[in-house]
Each structure stands twice: as C-alpha cells, then as structure tokens.
Length: 372
Image (tube, rainbow, N blue to C red; front, side):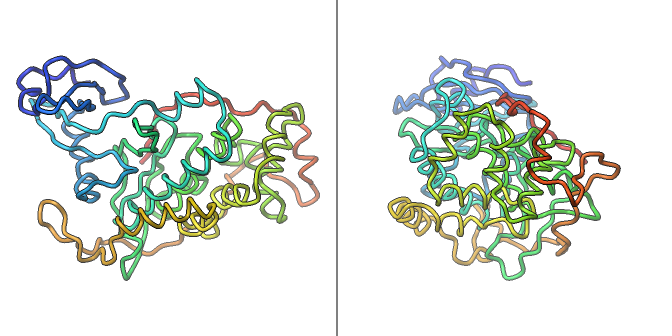
C-alpha cells in the first residue's frame, strides 16, 4: 500500500500541499485536495505502479476530450518510486454509502441512475472495455448528482462491440462475489464467457439492490437456493422478480415495492438478470425501455460520445486499434455444478422450492476476487 503523496509529487501535479485521506481499498488510497492554480477540488489516488499500469491501459482506451460524463478517468499522473499518484474527479459519495446511509431509492431516481449507467457502459463496450467489477463501491455520485463509474483495476480490454468481427472471451473468474454473473463462475480457458454480458448482470444486481435494499443472490450459482428458484422461474416462463421476492413472505416492504414497480422497470430488471447470457438484454435494448425523457437524454449523450468506427480510433499515445488475437467461443454452458444437491427435480414447483425460509442477502462491502 502506497503512503501519502510526497510534497514533490503534489508540486509536480499542481496540487496544494494539504490533502486529506478519503478512503482506501485493497491496493489504493484516495485523498482529496485542490488544484493550486484554480482551487478546484479533486481526488488524488495513490496506487502501486503495476496497478496503475493496468488501469492506465483502460484510461488510454477510453480517453476522450471532453471525457464521458459517466466515467472517472485519470487526468494527470506522477510516479515516485514504486507508487503512482494520479488526479481524478472528486466524488461526493458512492452508491454503497448512499443506500446504507439513506435506504432504498425510489423508482424514478433509480431509473435516472440507470440511464447514466447505461450511457457509460455503452461507451465503454463500444471501445472494447468490460469493467468486470461493477458494484456499489465502484459507482460514485459527483457534486452534480450524476453517476460515475470508476476503479478499472481488473477491467478487460476486448474487441469493441462495433468491430466487424466481435470475438469475445473472458477466460478467468473475475469480479466480486454477489455481483458476479453466473457464467463467470465457470469461466476458464476451455469455456470462456462474454465479458460485456457479465457487466450487464452486475448492473442488474446493483439496480435490484437499490430498489429492494438487499442483494438478489448471495452467489449466482446453484449453491444459493435463490439462484435455483430464479433459474426455475426463467425455465418455466415465470417472473424472476416475483419468484425472488416470494421467497420472503414476511417482507411486506419488498412485496409492496415489487407491486408498485412499473412494467418498464420490471422488464429492465428481468432483462439484466436473465441467467443465460445469450438471452440477456443488450444495453441498447435496456435503454429502449427507459421513459421517453430519459431515452432522449441517453440518446443525446450517446450521440456526443459515439465511436462510429472503433477500428479507426486513435489512442492518446498514437497507437491505432489493432485486431486482438481472440477466439470466438461458446458463451454459455449448463450452470449445473457437479455434484450439486440443490438442483430442482422436474416435479418441484417454485412454491416447493421456497418452503425453506431464507433471509435476504444483506448489502455489505465486498472485496474483488480474481481466480485464474
């Protein structure tokens, strides 16, 4: 873990000498400071050089002038020994603090956040970046109240979605436990998965949790009975949301929230939390479900930040995008874990699967996991 930025690093970055620690993670620390020339409040992030080098590859790929309003990228950096210190936009809070301090959000507020998240994710995916660790702790709110995606430590550079030959692979199990897509639990060299679809699942976990105040699953695999119920619901053309909330008959608040949701919001959630990745809704299809005003805002931002020919885009260092040597592969296989004792038989109904009372998975901070 890097220590506080030394005075000569602050001077090199044009930051006033007084900085305050705002938070720390597994490998990074975040400070608040001010630009000496303008008095602008900014974030100053310290990271080991190898961590920054991985993240900087994403910064280069997503570099844009002006920057996309839903992303937080490095603005300037300075390396001192084994540590790199970089300036980024200062955020007011993150979604974890927002929901744990203030409780669930209303539907209209959530839809506004969804619109901004979709805008940022469309931009990222079109330029060939899959975040792979979307979660409350990595989605912030700036002073204007806008959603901002940050922390690209384990993000993957892949073939952009608009590329003529979109061959995709994600051969490692990446992400954070309760947000990780079901297919990601099985990812390996022989059976990689679509990293873009994995991002959409994680976004669904975030949106569900903002509305209901708990995670839809502890883990999206058959060891979690909630997942078994959701999979059974989808296999029998029933509502995933109704099946999940129905598992908590004593939670009247969740039942009332579900009853009050509009059809569009239900469809957005059902689309994001579709277990089979090839059937999971695309970002554009999800944006089409937004209310008319939010659709208009989404389209306006998309038109300003729309790489129409990603194979011709130039990176900041002048290197043109090149075809990546990736293999088009099977994106989905059976989600049955070998030897699982929790598989439903053909005669089981959702009511029968729900007989064992469960407690909703509580929203807690979770660290990223990356398994080779």
